[in-house]
Image (tube, rainbow, N blue to C red; front, side, top):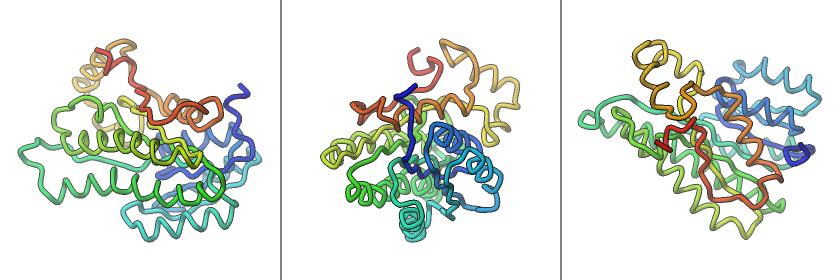
Length: 253
């Protein structure tokens, strides 16, 4: 589809070496974007970088521990220096700690908030300064259905993703004047290395499939990536400030 073409654009994807991040980076490249891979371990992205180059796209691998904001700002500046600009930012980095709300420590709460919410805000802020100078762009935040509904045992994660969803609205309203669109996607459970241990529990998997109330199946990374690519491109030119559930009907129940 012409509306999905990203030819000539430059995208930065955080936590891009595996799972949903890897699928997003590859899908963006397949639709024409040059891609910067923000990763903690550059060696882990070697294979993906080679695959993107084989598609005829430029690729940069930049060290990005999103809890080190000074290093992130330097990494963002290096992407602009090497690839010319950033048209698309995908804030994919995040994570949670499973524990009852009565047991959440300040340390664990701060860890989840810093990794998932604080990083999304300040990485977006620095990229947006570059986007403002170059005439605009698209930011897509990877939120979660956990930001829309309560998941027992994941209170700190749910709070952090709910904040990302509301942040998406706030930034969209402020930055629209610069031609910057800001959206989010909110996936359900997706088959990745990170979810594999939980989904290996047959009882947990069966309960999860039941709660995905319409389609009754676990999601795939490529299904999230397709929505991100759409929101990044001109086909979504009038869409900003929204959080799109990719949840098989979980939150519709």
